[in-house]
Image 1 (tube, rainbow, N blue to C red):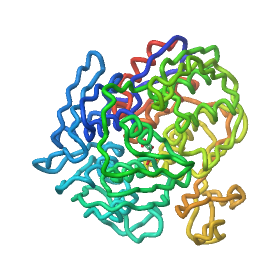
Image 2: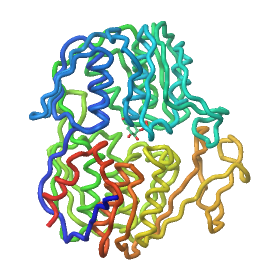
Image 3: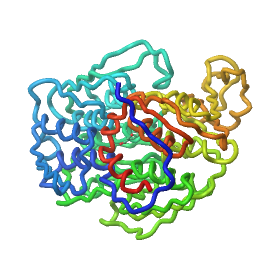
Length: 484
Ligand code: S3P
């Protein structure tokens, strides 16, 4: 195995420009494909996940051309019901966004198709999306296993890819989501485009709203009132002709944390997406004392996505408490925030982080195992099924760590029925020392460990970092331009 070596950097300085946001880019293909007209997508990121979205829609008969030199793709939309039955099953790689959102549009097509996935995505729960789609009248079958963990609330089994779906004749539903998930919300909204009448989705906590913004841009009948989104079905979407994908704030987060924790640093990141449903990382870091300034804030296309430049100067961090309600706005940034907490003075607490267990890998495990090897003081508190009652009356739970710590950290309302009552507690300020760590095949764990290694004393080795290509193929080359 080839280990990737990282040694301490003195500081980072300079200016960087990021490729387009993965979530928005993925949606741009899906929504353009089912709209009327041609859409040119600019600043399209050629990461693995987005390439899987392109392949999936090419397999469904959509013409898509790519001009890699200018990072532009053109999607030739075929209308709501214009997808073609593919010759065989479609492999969607390990892209969860591609799989879950594509199920939403397949729910409205009049043919059967099987979606298969790579190893990591094949182990991620799908009942959260198949269940509401079935309520709308879609025929779906998936690999089903008895449930061992509390993955989707109140069921005895869980479902995984491969998934076979036969769409058509959808009825509108009102769906109160048991889990805060933008992918699930988006799948239902996309299916709602095909139902006769109004489909309502109610979120427990607001999640990223890129689908809503883009559907509005394509002139869908969509209304948002606090946590309720209503979509009117049977209305064709109209392409705006051109979409610019703003820089990816999740990619920016690695540089933001690095510049904050390496003394003497100052960097400028240009044209980053500043959608409030994604800027939790900035709010939390500022609360911790980070020196982060936004300039050139603008809305490139009315009502689409806000964009701006971010200036970061190094600063001393203090600990914070991240509340459950904040998690959706920084869900993908939790690994790098764990690194930041190791460099902050005092005890940081990350509440309601259970969803991290079911990302590309179990990120609670990957990050805490790695950071502990580097000398960090991290404890994870998990709920078991016995003991104290949950505040929302959904049964009982007992909290324990390996060293027998009790429930004192779990006061307050957990809300919802998911009962993912996990907390991470990090005692910051300990010396972080280079070690041999693992990416666990997960892009965000790998990049977080590169950042930790650059700020640690001594040398770090990471087992395999090719997984970074899933979201950020030019991560290392950009990093090299700013390391002093
Ligand atoms: C995403 C939503 C989030 C996020 C994922 C991308 C999206 O997942 O973690 O990386 O594009 O909608 P969940 O919807 O499962 O929270």
